Each structure stands twice: as structure tokens, then as C-alpha cells.
Length: 115
Image 1: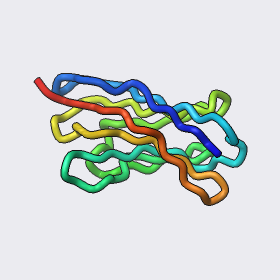
Image 2: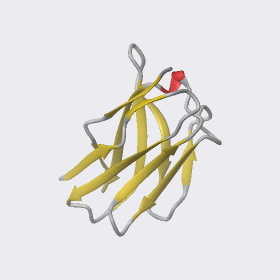
Image 3: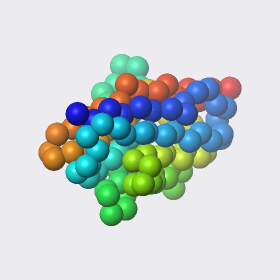
Image 4: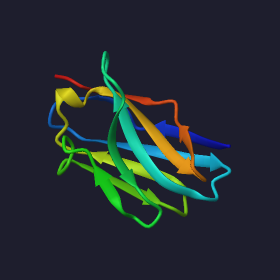
């Protein structure tokens, strides 16, 4: 079993920044891809960004150039630096990882972008 705990969400004004963290614990050996997804009210959960254990990244078009995903393998933690935030970025952000083909999800952290 893998446990994922997100932190760093909150309320921010448009144009502001936030940094999300996702700490993995438990059976962490073999974790390959870590990523961030988000779900806005009334919408389906969508991919935001992913990063492999070797550092290869992938981003949704809507966040390219504004968000940066990174990973500290020594700390078993993934990060999502979010800059130039927009109201449409408002959502619950979930961390996800894949270990030996099995997906694990965190509990989510709320990000609200509003003036």
C-alpha cells in the first residue's frame, strides 16, 4: 500500500502562485509515475501534469508555461508549482502515483483562485 498526502492548497488571487506538495509513504519501492489531477465542480477529473522517476514530464495544454511539476526521489515527494493562476484553475487537486501497475490517489487539496 502507498499513502499519498497533499498539502499547499488555499485561496489565491488571479495572477498569484501556489506550490502543492505530495508526500508518498508506505510501500514506495517501485513507484514510477507521479502526477497531479484536478476536478472542478460539475466537471470530470482531468490530468494536470505527470513526471516519471527519471524526470520526464507531461502537461495539459491548459497549464503549459504556467505550472511546473518536479520530484524529489530522496524525499518521495512530488511538487506542483503553479504560477499565473486563473479562476478556471479552481478545483480540488489530487496527487496520483503508479506502483507496479496499481494506481494510488491522495485525498485532494482545494485550490481556489478568486479576487
